[in-house]
Image (cartoon, rainbow, N blue to C red; front, side, top):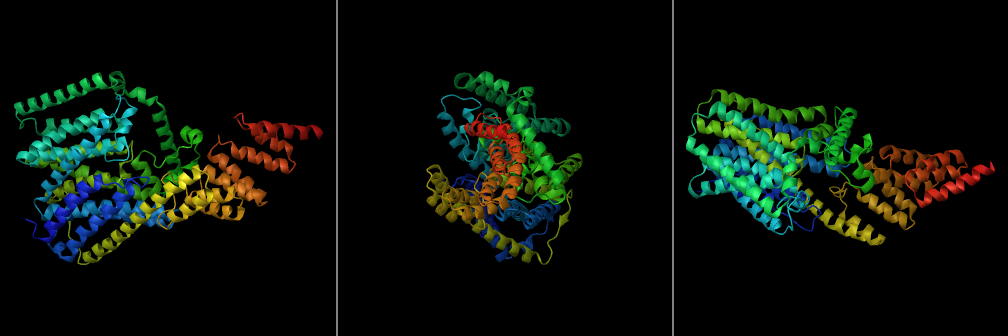
Length: 610
């Protein structure tokens, strides 16, 4: 069965990329899944793609398609932004994630068209992953004292966050339904059970973005069903489905009545209540900041992986969790705005075309084709694709490796079916394709190296942060240098490691070393209110007052409620004997701080003597 290299590569891909990788974690990394899965997937694709190239299996592959070309172009556009990004490490990491997206698609398309059993293997792998994630989630749920919107965040299973787990379950549900359609005997029964399990978890976990995507998927599929299939599915089958769904919903309601907050669960379906919530207002503010960023950089974008260090360019006013609680956002909770902000108009258009082209081709297919089983399969893919796009408009599935794997699989399977049927143009591989695949192998080797450096960086960053809390400044400097590399320059909250080092040197009284590191931190993250404030303080210590004033004012522009630079400006003007200006800045401080009271008394005494 596994005699040919293609078959062996397909087996490695099915088990490794579709089951092992999405559940793989290294717990001493701060983000236990992102970099480890990045590295593991790169290694798996290196093996499978290498096997195809080494054994010349690509010579038998005839039909690539336009979706693959768009994915490759999207990767290259991301990669090109490295040339103007502030942080090379973050830009190359984000770009190479897009290579993995293309790599999974490329492998899946080759296996789908050259190895007939691969499709069923993929469905089986998704079912196994469902049971792995579901088992962990059930254990986590059993440990909850009660179930409500807040305690549910403790259920993340194989993902870093509850909402990400929900969106992964949504993608897995699509493949479980395909398993019900195409698998036989025991595996078909497991696919049915997997479908019920996934449906239950999606409802129970209360992730509203996923609910929205899920209901839109149901609506879309309902429209397609009544258009295409209502005459061909037996009424008994429909009745069984209705009974199963009713029992599931009844079980979920009973579960919440017994263990959870039933009234809170019902309220989460009320959309106007969400629109008035702090979460919704914060998300809208983030979108507005991102739209501002797009207006400032419409052509080139700020660079792949750079949104998190650039959104302060449009000020963080209105983002109260940042201003008051020092929470740092890593993405705008909208993949489309995120892509536009980082890769510019061309990257955005290519990204949108990937999905729009598939949607148009799928509708054209459904209008004409009469093969009911294939049409039903296409309808499932199309419905879930539309639901996924709605989820991506409120969340950030593009960031995570497991989501990239299963969205690439969706794109590969759907585009392959449409290409075979003639609704997408088949593209023959050029003669120099082996050179391109060879280049991809080199890039995948680079990925493994990048992943290793980032895991090492997070390992030492954890020690560095502990040293900071313990005020062990020399230890902090040691661990920060251990963590730092050309592929790891920012911690997972987007704070440059040089900022930590600069803080340590400043506290130790070494202003020269501090200013060197703060300058580097400022280069990586030029719109952080803390970095601009700390660099300004170093300039002030060195007697460079005008530079200090300029940066303090920039820090206030970024964060209007940040009080430190206002007091610092007051101190500078006081030392310059410009007491009126000093009074203005100190009085602009809204908090009742001891320094403010002290400064006001001193300044007012000076003004009385004038």
